[in-house]
Image (cartoon, rainbow, N blue to C red; front, side):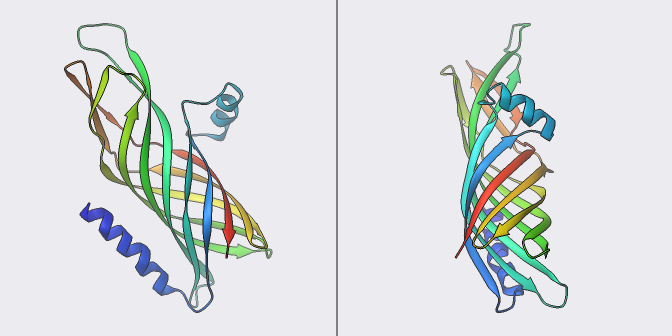
Length: 203
């Protein structure tokens, strides 16, 4: 929790780097747990229910003096589905269960606007996992909280107050979660790579 508070302070402090020309708004969209756009296309055609999620949050954007860039910190709630495959104790057949996990994301992006409407950006994304819900009734959660860090790359367009962006997020540090299979503890990594499609509105 101390790390989360530290990152929140970073989120607020980053806005102090901007000049008077400051924009803010809201955002929301779809998250997809995948390493590649090809996998997204194939999985979406087959349903993709076990890997999709959503996000919603707020963002700020301000120019960085003399560099010709802007900084864009965000505070986002994300809920994403994933799968974990494990081997129950005393068996030779693996089992797969899906679960939903909830987290707070704080991307701090550095970007540049060009052609009047287009943006490209990249930067670190700080994440705090709030919890997980498993789909199987015989699995009892022990712990899934954790702080991790990733990086986001992306681009988009902004037409007036409405924007659309596409991002790829790669996780760096692992976040362990545990559940009970009967009385047997199973540990797994909640770290995921994501493709994120977002719609924004600027006030």
